[in-house]
Amino acid sequence: MKILIVDDFSTMRRIIKNLLRDLGFTNTAEADDGTTALPMLKSGSFDFLVTDWNMPGMSGIDLLRHVRADERLKHLPVLMVTAEAKRDQIIEAAQAGVNGYVVKPFTAQVLKEKIEKIFERVNG
Amino acid sequence: MTQADQRLAEFEATLQANAPQLIESLQQGRFDEAAQMFNELNQARNQGLYQEVGKLTRELHNAIVKLEMDTCATGGDPSPITDATDRLSYVVAMTEKAANRTMDLVEESAPLVNYVSYEAQSLTADWQRFMRREMNAEQFRELVRRIDQYLQRSMNDGSQLSQNLSEIMLAQDFQDLTGQVIKRVTRLITELESNLVNLVAMAGQVDRVAGIQHDRDAMRAEQEKKKQEKEPSNGEGPQMHADIREDVVSGQDDVDDLLSSLGF
Image 1 (cartoon, chains in turn red, yellow):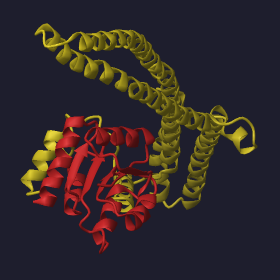
Image 2: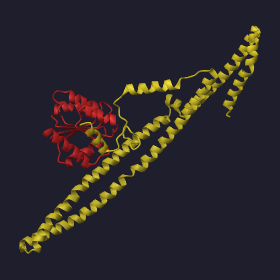
Image 3: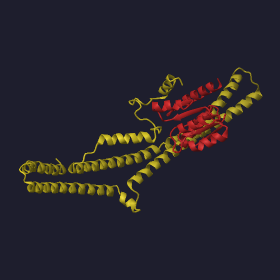
Image 4: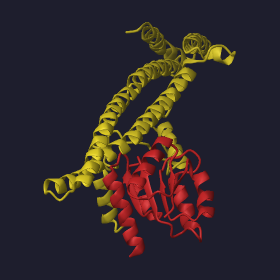
């Protein structure tokens, strides 16, 4: 299970990486923006994407749209972890095909639940 | 009444006082006289206008000097705005450093704690065997050795952990430093805002003398439209008034409810 963590703040990437490691996911990679993440996804055989929304180059929502529009990537499970909490945005993300939405600040428990839920659905 | 308001009032009073005479001159066909009056009124108005524009220009210049923006343009010391930007970058850098330092210390401490608890569990199992007299002398000697080692390590690890906890506490010192910096920047912004409001008030005076009416509502609507068109999916960052805003969720539970209500 190879996971890509995308966030423009390195401390947040580190926190998520640690939480994933505690859950048993040790094979992780990082990107600091949608623009650097997309090529990594296209060539890297990742199984899961965790991304923030607000990023300077390409935002998480745009990254999501690119992923869903790519023939090889369109079934990639995507979890959004973000401070964006407007209803309209949550709906927008759901309609763009996000598999889970976690708002910051979040707990380890919430992250665990959402990831497990996504994999239940994917395998089910 | 401010001096400015008083001047405006005088100007308007002059206009009012001369109006009846002007009307009479026109009605009586004394066009020369009327033209003369028009000129005088026009001059009074122009003078008023020049005065107000002059004041506005002076204040604008003062504001620029105050914010030291012109020295920036000539390559002098950085302006307060540049200074504020630098300070905020410093805040970001400091908080990142503190967060990483804290996480480093936590990562260092976790294995120590794990060893203490894991080894205690394992020793307990063997200790129980000893208590039930299921141990021979050889095994007991081994147990004693392990317990000795465990005590030694817990002592050392314990003291290392204490130290780490202290350092984690210290690493939070960024809050004081960043707090001070942020307060300065807030002061600068507030001052800037009040200067701008002042300038706007003065521009208002100029408008009044010149008889110009701006459709403020239309201007505001135009701005809103432009803002919407530019980046509809640009976020707002962390919400500070989620509890009173209706278009914002107040937590993960809200998010989950919203999504499941839509069938996601």
